[in-house]
Amino acid sequence: MRNSRKTLAAALALAAVSGLAAAQPAPAGAAAPAGAGMQVVAVPSAGSPLVAIRLLFDAGSIYDPAGKEGLAALTAQMIGQAGTAKRSYSDLVEALYPMAATIDSNADREVTVFYGQVHRDTLADYTALLEEALLHPGFGQADFERNKEQLLAYLTTTLRSSDDEALGLEAIQDEIFSRHPYGHPSEGTVAGLKSITLDDVKGFYREHYTRANLILGVAGGYPAGYAEQLEKDFAALPAGQPGRKALPPAPKTSGRNFHLIEKETASVGVHFGYALPVNRAEADYYPLMVANSYLGEHRTFHGRLQQQLRQARGLNYGDYSYVEYWLTPPRTSKPTPNVPRREQFFSVWLRPLVPSTAQFALRDALYEVGRVRDKGLTQAEFDLTREFLLNYSKLWGQTLANRLGFQMDSRYYGMPSYLDEIQGRLPKLTLDEVNRAARKYLQTESYEAVIVTAKAAELKAALQKDGPSPMKYNSQAAPDVLEADKTIEALPVKPTAIEIVPVGQVFEK
Image (cartoon, rainbow, N blue to C red):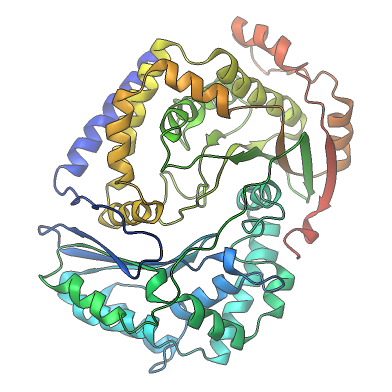
């Protein structure tokens, strides 16, 4: 096992060096204070034939008015997926088609990003269309109805019916951040979306799409003076009011609270977690990042959770942990930029599980988190995990667009380049610092748990009983696994509260 992990780390190191040697981003520079007017992040790469453009607005779902949840997302859709004042949406798509380009958007809790990438030969034409969409949205009634229906369908059809992974991810955030501005999906709620009018969208655009709320980013082989001209063009936006929305402290979870989402599904998905008081702008984040990577980096096999639950016991496909929000985990293999959040959360994701082993898998994951908290990493485990993370993180900025996105996130957080911080801080970390962070921030006493399952009443009864949940293997398990199982199968969970929520009620209001 150790040799295979060293081989993986070495392979990642080689890939990272070869993939990044061609073009390194320029330093992001000192961050401007939040709300000081439009900020510009430029990452020139003269040898690249591509140009990436990103506009990051401080206009996320935390600004949704009560009862209008989804307004930020719908406004973004009405800019990126709708007609302009000059042309219909179909005409806009037709104009973009020869460039093999799109105007994409994503509204998250704190920010909304618009982004695209084109060949530099078509940069002028693409820029004109991008500015037309952002500066002169059409706000047509037909586009409004279409985009509202798309968001409603995402909540009621995609999340509730066909995407259990995303369903659990959204639900665990709702529970961790209950009664907090983060406490509803960025896409909104069913009741909130239904209450939004086209005038609401126009008002949100006027209030939040301003120079004070904008970080403008450009990267690649763009011509001299292009970034300055782009900044001048977007100066047509209203000035806006400086300053970000103040956030209350993240809710502190008390006890072990289980939310069982009942739906007809063959497998069981488990998320559990709690709010964290640190983000990547703070020193404690980096030793915690190493401890988390040892537990389970997303879609990798080196993590302790993946090794113990999947490889040693064959319980399921994926077992990972996170110290930041991860955008669309089933479809992404590396962190996605431009979803910065000042308040983060720790979580563990187990999916998909056979119903008969779900209780044991939950205990096994809690056991592993507790083990890292109580025993920490050994020197060898620390060295190997740090080496892996130093190499693996180099792959996060392989693309031009991602390098730009991470630089813009760093500007949002008011910190130096995140990818540079990883490379600068991790070599200086010590084993004691990582284990100290694990003891300080990892815990299994108080958390929210979301379990997507059929026959929720049966699982509720088993969780309340809290009796042993022995594993049965189809083949002979290793002696050390069987020995650990004796502790895991009887690990007390002692739920503080358990509720069953029919899937049809999730994200309703």
